[in-house]
Image 1 (cartoon, rainbow, N blue to C red):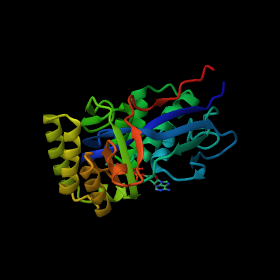
Image 2: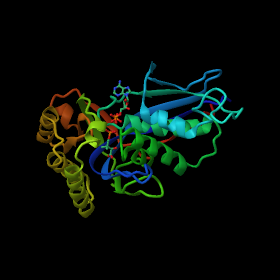
Image 3: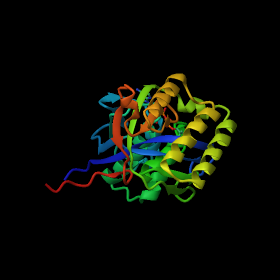
Image 4: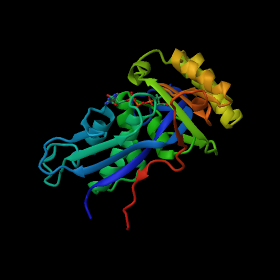
Length: 299
Ligand SMILES: Nc1ncnc2c1ncn2[C@@H]1O[C@H](COP(=O)(O)OP(=O)(O)O)[C@@H](O)[C@H]1O
Ligand SMILES: CC(C)(COP(=O)(O)O)[C@@H](O)C(=O)O
């Protein structure tokens, strides 16, 4: 029995979104729809004996992921403060966070949201913080929003499946539906797209295109409609980039519905269209259940 804990959060590809910023990060969020992936983010949290500051490693390298730091701060003084605790709490301890993922970072897979959510779930267990799931999702969502790296990923990653975000925000504010489908998914990445930059720009055209796409999907909640609405969104919101557009067209020519992962230089497709078209695509499944702690092994 150790006091370390590991959680897994699926990757989340946003198909389309309508952003709703708010001063209250639990109220802020986005409407939209997307796909959670069996490929995702694994986070282990353990107490770092004798350390003064939390450490965050991504695939073995020290990194700064603002959303993860926000989670540790929010859970402080128990896991994020100084060695003695911000309020002098003698029990305060410092967290060592290890994030592992095969997904590319910054390319539209919600790695920062997954890392934040995994950190919240694992830290709660490792440090016996006695928070409920809704509270931990709220902490991770608020940290992700405050970091400017996402609006709807955390809540989608907690839900799993093919989430339709009907109302923005953390548990208590947001509302969901979903598509009851579990297709094979392929993706290919050409590089990063700064989420913070897009979210810091003019959001009106993005919101209008996102709302139109959501209306369309709610009228016909099917996989082909999800991808068709996503394509229309990418064009109308002005977010499509040329190399992704080319890959989408190639996959569609092979009979696979395809679109762009928001927000990254990434194309995703249902079925085998990207690999059939000659792209070095990665294949995975839809994640059926959403983020959770790894259960204790019984051997
Ligand atoms: N090697 C890296 N490449 C890109 N982002 C990185 C890297 N290491 C850490 N980061 C952090 O990860 C976060 C990526 O967030 P974001 O752009 O929303 O991407 P994603 O779609 O993967 O969530 C940012 O906070 C960024 O500072
Ligand atoms: C599209 C985005 C705002 C950012 O997604 P990512 O770049 O994957 O962090 C997402 O959080 C959403 O609200 O749907």
